[in-house]
Length: 414
Image (cartoon, rainbow, N blue to C red; front, side, top):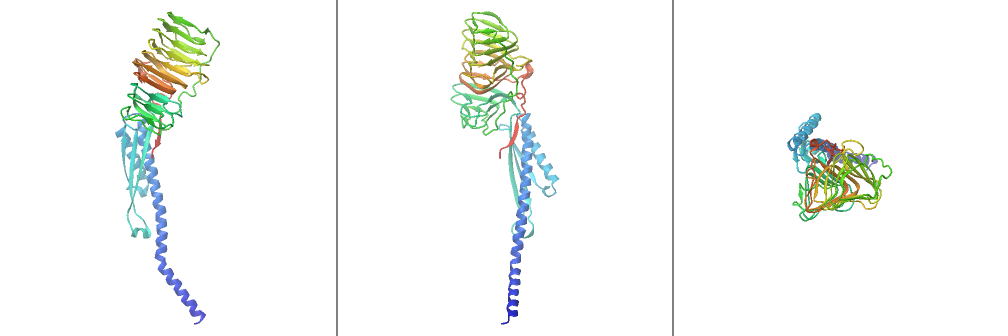
């Protein structure tokens, strides 16, 4: 056999092999092209579903019952974007809103028709995606537990009840029990959210808390503190005193006891290196009053028979803030309410590094137009019922920025 004959035979075999493999090679190339295109189409549909869910959830920033509008908004956003894409004009989308969770779920589908040889195996292919967006905030804020670690940052025990039906409750703790309601404790709110988990069952929460929520920023973190002058009153004690007190700097603690009836004149009261204690059957009252606590062991103790009726200033350094703990405070950081007669606390209680504790047998703040509490920890026990209203129009005390209709955040859950 000549070399020419052998070469010719080999060329023929190669040609035959190539002819046999050509459909497979073209199919593989077609499959690669189709897969890349399919992946691109799916990614585009997912992006549209994500954006549409976010558009729908945004409605919950202005209304806690936005269900129908949120669904319409999400579906309209999806279909509008599909129409803008020539290839996706036939895609479909449906939205489902959940008012209790402030979420919008978008389901989108598209019949994808492969090209080249892949079309011989299956056509069309159904592309189906889902996206769920949640609104966090937007409602008025009545409680933020600022503590980021540890359990029971917002905690209720006994028969305690927190009633904030028109506002939101937040715990920033990432702990699995960062928010808790034990025993017969109940948290009622428009929206309850925790960065971690919660301890309690459906009987303890109305509605059930949402978990893994983004941390809620301190809305007063940039607020400038009142200026502190020299001590004007040192360790004053008022026993069975009936009269008025003036704004100023009170050092080393203030005790109001017996059957005192004290009216606080409007202005800022600075308590430095000591607590404000109201004991016995004493009563303190005042409008336009700001209580600022700084230094060592500066806090509050309202004993069980005392009576408290206060409203925050309308202007000045403490406009809208009734009780404020300085960021420079140290030592014991407890603001304790044991009184059964704290019916009026109009304004914001701001304790960035302290605990607000209420242990009473009756309602607290029920006669207030509005009350908000921002503290490291909030703890209620016994039969305490903390009533946090949001009737902003019924008071001239301003609401600090970041509390009323607080903007909120929108994010994808899945």
